[in-house]
Image (tube, rainbow, N blue to C red; front, side):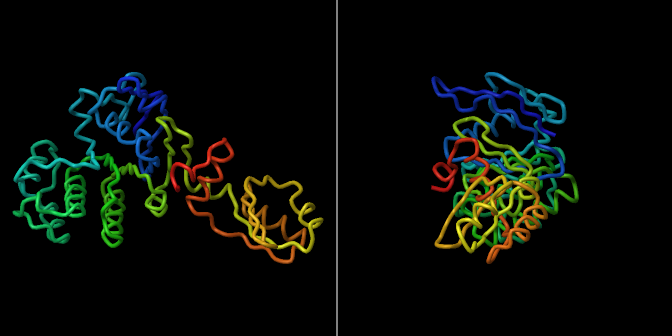
Length: 301
């Protein structure tokens, strides 16, 4: 488990991370969402022990990470701007990481590079951006590290390759307890893989929630009423967060359990109603607007 408490980091007069408190638990995929400049990369670099926090604490399995090589062996950072040695090949990079990570799986590395069609003795500098991302993911998975911190890892990968990487993550979570932490500016990238999502904005955490709990507690209802009077009557007693109207079709985001919301609308007998599945974007839009933010301005826009 990674425990982050009241973390802060400044660069000159710029506060990159401001009083961040998060728990990243074992057995789940943690998604960290935020625009460029929100503080995602700085936060991940502090978790890996690359940067020292100005304030606050980071504990990885109850141990501090900074200046602690034993803890750093449990963490692999997949940077958005990954560095490879000049003239290095995948084989040379694997030998380097084998020296750094005692549990590096050389046999698996050779197998995965073959599956992904990455030539082991070709210079990495000749690889495309997507191929470099694939190589870094493979190095991370083969390192044997428990925590895989991914900074925009899926950016530059085609849809088929993204799904392949997600499948590898799921396999390692089952086989050896891997804990992926995936930072992205794109909510759509995280929807089908993350269990818990944190929203970072201007260095601080706006929201950190279990995705399934959010889905269970919010309902999206499309409904048509016979009259305005029926509509006013039907909404009594409901905790309506968002309302949209297109002609006679009303769409409401309502806080509550699905069974309760369905039972309520059956009693008021509208012309038509249907409870729909909420996307991750819709959940975040609903939750952040409640606290006075419009996520569409800094994530979707």
